[in-house]
Image (cartoon, rainbow over all chains, first blue to last red; front, side):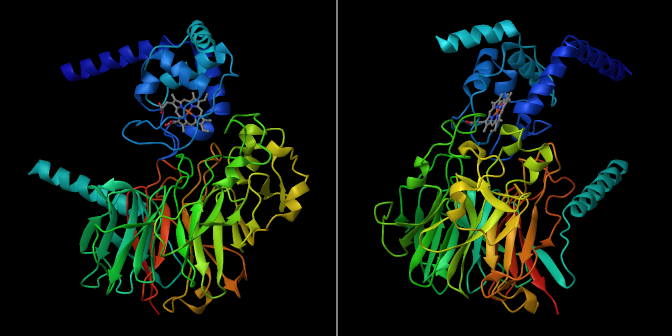
Length: 134
Length: 409
């Protein structure tokens, strides 16, 4: 009985969290994802074994936002382990995306495919972009 | 007691569920056994005259990059696994009394006596220092009858853009990558430490080849090219999403010394049925330009299916139509998303006098299980080899399963 109560409680907490993410931003984020990211990382974010990494609960997606914004703006081509595997494809820079587009797509991936993390704002992208350009 | 029966039920369900997922469909008369399992990223494989399988791994398993698998009681299932070679790679082959295996930078060989490796710790480096920049890094190998080894060096690039895979970045002219990659290099099979300076660029203009085979009937090298990615994503004005899924063709080339298959300047358009200029070089789906002079492929397949192995069948176990024909293992697509993925099967192409003599057909399907998707696929066909009795071996690099396919009259 107490178990069911706890279960219900945790559902409502999760629910409250996802409601905190703006629907409009999620929908813009999904559009940006479909156009620029889906081909490699796949519709459900599971990626392609050995080639393109998953976006499901990786330390990059859920971790430091500045670093995450940098991956999208600068691209990513380092031989690094992601959830225990290496990936051989090349991710090109996506610096042509606007601050709002970058913020939306990152908010989208941080709250899709089973991920849960805070939103990324356009202001945060703007600051990160400035730091890169300087 | 009750708990046990529930566990049993779950176990039975899991068993039937799993076995249902992976049943391989083949033409009437063909059967298969699961020869080996759980080798991890099993890439190419070769079978010795005695029937032992040697398989190359792209990720070390218990510190080993090569496994020798023996079926001592002849029931179609390996009963002994022996690992050696502490490097990862894709290519493997037996030639002139040696076992050859590749890393992503070169090729090693081991002396064999009576079909056994003399000393698994005595690897001799035959080829070294080849381009390895992660992308398209695997080195596949095959041999002619004149003491030469042919090695694929894949281009670390999609279409030789100034900035790889960046929308709008132009193609470099000429493409500097072709100096040291994007082709097949030829080396002696017995000279140590060869590299670019003493090898020959046998054929160029090939983006990435994983499946290749020397056709002993006509004495020519045949290769399967992995065509470029991102036509729809980069050129939505030229390609619809559906056209981007089926283009460009995956192509088979019959190569001669000096052949130029056209990458990165050209691609084969499955809609226009022609080799055309790539959009990074000014192509508009009509311009042919320099592509008119490039080596033409001898058969084309739908896009992105990723041909990872090619084998000309020389056995007598299979029905006559298979003799000297080509089997191709298609690893399965990813660059069709969100359109449905394709491949994840074995194809057969009938051949006569070294040229395709009929349409390609799916020979074996079902490897992916419920989902033909790169991550969710249960298995992805990667390597092919022929046994001394004419049976066909297939490897998978998703989990490391090996199937042995036989024909019963």
